[in-house]
Length: 343
Image (cartoon, rainbow, N blue to C red):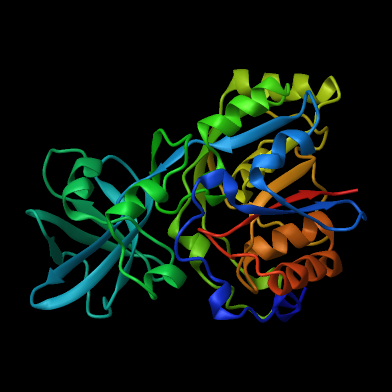
C-alpha cells in the first residue's frame, strides 16, 4: 500500500509535552465497532470492558539510553537501540559520519564505549568498557530517551524518569516506553480486578526504531527493526483459557499486540515465545491473538498508524483521528488514549 495513504495533518499544539495528572484522568476515545464514537476517560475502563476480559501489559522498563559523548574532540549523540549481549548494544549515533570501527566514544562519569561495526541501517555496535553492568553505567551517564517530538520542544528533566515509566515496568531493556500503559494507576487496577477484568504481562523491549519514519513510498519496501520479546508458558496458557471461556484479549499498547500476534499460530492459539520479532502489520492482516487494543494516538505515516488501520479499517481510523483532532485530544507518548474494539 502507498505510505501517503496514512498521512494526516496534526496541529503542533495537539502534541502533549507532559502526561495527565492523575494518570487515569486522561481522555479516552472509545471506538466500538460501527457505533458512534464515545468521549470517555481512562478511569471509565472497568465499565467499558466485560467480566472475563484480559488486559495484556508490557512490563519492559525504560533505561536511560541516550548519551552525549566525545569522539576525540567531536561531539556525538548516542541512542541505544537493542541489546546484543552483556556489554554490546546496537545504537544510532548522531553526528557520527566520521566514526570508524575501533574508535572510542567517551561519555560522562568515566563511561566509554568502542565502535565495533557499522550496520546496513546506519546504526553501530558499541561495546562498553569495564566490568560493571551496562545498566549501571547508563544510570550514571545516560538520560531518559524521550521521543524526538517531545525532546525537540523541551529538555528532559528529573520528572521524566518517573513519568516515562509504566506501573508495570520491571524488566530493564526498553529505549522507549510502552506508552498506552502510562495511564494506569494502582486505583484503576484495583477497580478492574473488582470488575472481574484480568491482567497479564509479557515483555517486549521497545527499540528506538519505533520513532523512525517510514521512508519508503510503499509499505512493502519498509524494513522493520527487530525487538526482543518473551511470553512464558504459564501466561500463554492463561490467555488461551480466558479466550476459550469467552473473554476478550485486549492488548494495552501496540507493543503488547505485536508480540501476541508474533506468538500466535494460524490456529489462533498463543504459544510461549522468546526471541526477536519484526512483525509489520498493515491493512489486510488477519488478527489471531487479540480482540481489542488500548493505544495512544500515533504519528502520521507511522507503522503504528498502519497497525491501527489494519485493526479498524483505514477510513474508520481517518475518521477517528479527525474526531480526536477536532475535539482537542492530546497526541503521542504523553497524550490521551483510545480503546479500539473491532466489530
